[in-house]
Length: 363
Image (cartoon, rainbow, N blue to C red):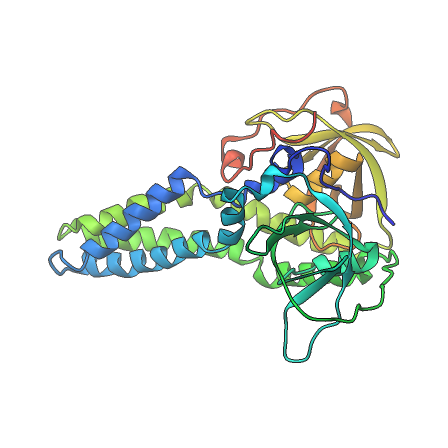
């Protein structure tokens, strides 16, 4: 089996660097809370303000933003609750596990541990457990709730204890195949092919909505419309980021389509500094080179940090499509052979938008 990222089992989970990295996508920041509050209050106020085209347009836009805010708050709420209840105060435990056979008319996933059945919706985690026959567990707590994760990913899933007898599914060996033949990777590539245009379509829609709101809210004056404009304007800064994400997605798709095999490349990540690229020194066939990850994928970067290896799924126009065998994620690596002796350079201002904090990566 391949060497994947694994959480530390000798320290409390809250002190494990890969767990802290995963929590960046779970926690809701103060800025988001304040923004959601402003949007909700202004949306309610539109029903009491004088009727005008700007006020009506603001009510529609703010209503959509309220729904989007709820969509950001609801996912991971069970994980946030588990964090508040102290599940991360204990270390991860490596536990032998098997995947239970699917039940008729029951879409839930079940893992069979030694005398314990954990039930939930675990996405691709059962595929990893089916091959490796192990899972990492926190809990269960007195209410029967547990957190689980598998090797190769920072993602945590909430599970609940279940009663009953279940038959274990047969162990599945996943041979390494070429990236172009790997089902999960192909599903990911196909999804990005279909949805990738949203990366640049949504900013265009944002521009148009802001323009319409300004035109309708200036005369007659509609304060709610101007507040909606103020809420939307910061999103316009992500335009360069969105265009780059679209281009990288298209390049990675073409790189995978022409690839015949995964290529492991030793990489030593450089210490991350705020405002700088995630980067490392790669031992490429042509010699050491600086590799920069313009839009890093948290799971893939964590695996590179933990194993010292990046898996190249293919190349397109000199850029590397980096993934992990058996998973569906991809990110782009840009190679700079002439900068192998240098550190990572600062990012452009627009690259710092929507940037995760990678200070927890091991030094």
